[in-house]
Image 1 (cartoon, helix red, strand yellow):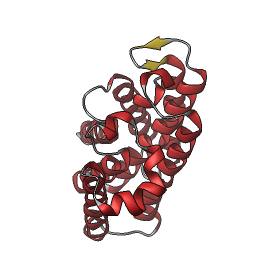
Image 2 (tube, rainbow, N blue to C red):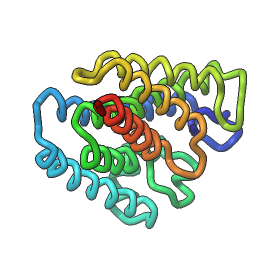
Image 3 (tube, helix red, strand yellow):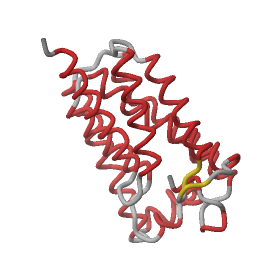
Length: 209
């Protein structure tokens, strides 16, 4: 995960990392609203798709340095933008909304809720623990960050209703491994999609007579 790189690699200061990940944790409102308000898949997508389109538009304004970004949005979130995002990539916020649309459309509600919470909680812990305490590196990641990610995803698996322990813990492990190995594909996409696929496959296997 890029957030585990040292400052020397061109990443944001740790204080901004904390702010960025605090904002990232705010994305828990998506699976939270989906579950606790009992919204249907269609209604949730009806909320998420326009929200995602708005975020994409903001990102396009940023990448093209349009007036909306220069005069307004940059003052709010400009300091939290990573170097690779400044160089032409979408922000993590856009990717998390895109992944939310994907997993809500693809999976049953318990799986979608867990998959989204895996990336939100696991990614946050991996980033902060990896940046602050990561000593045993592999690539751009650290053992400490990945262990923190596993702790977070396991906690999510234990808390999501209507998800068996076997399925939830398996999804947590897959999410952690994908986060640790993610390189070219943004982990905000790869983690929820692949962990959701793994859980769905396992549910299908376990339900087969």
